[in-house]
Length: 172
View 1 (cartoon, rainbow, N blue to C red):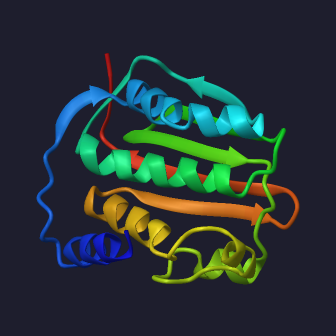
View 2: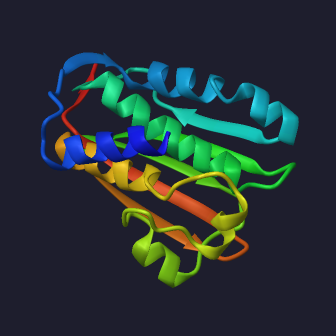
């Protein structure tokens, strides 16, 4: 997995991954990705809350965005204790859409938030879990390739919120 992530990140950084944009329903993609984690959510008794505008379509690379949503959801589950909550919110904004994925997990301090998108960076808490410090670096590279951006807000003991902006929201 580490080698795959390193190669993928290198290809993204050098823009050698072609973008295959086509219109699709973003809400359906988010639901599909969340359902892929259903077993883990059940095992940890994680509550999933959603607020999705079901009519939102975007023109983007669905495969690359799968990587983004799966990574953000995987991290939310990894750092949220049993009986916690993960929330996915999709909204249409002016000239685009926003997706927020938040959790009631352990949260991060300011230093971690500043470095969370750096390659190979892992906060002290992540050393006790699986990971290689490349997932969020990949997420950031994918979003930049697609013309999007990502922000994070977090506080220790209060969870984290990742906010993704994607251009070209298309409503049906």
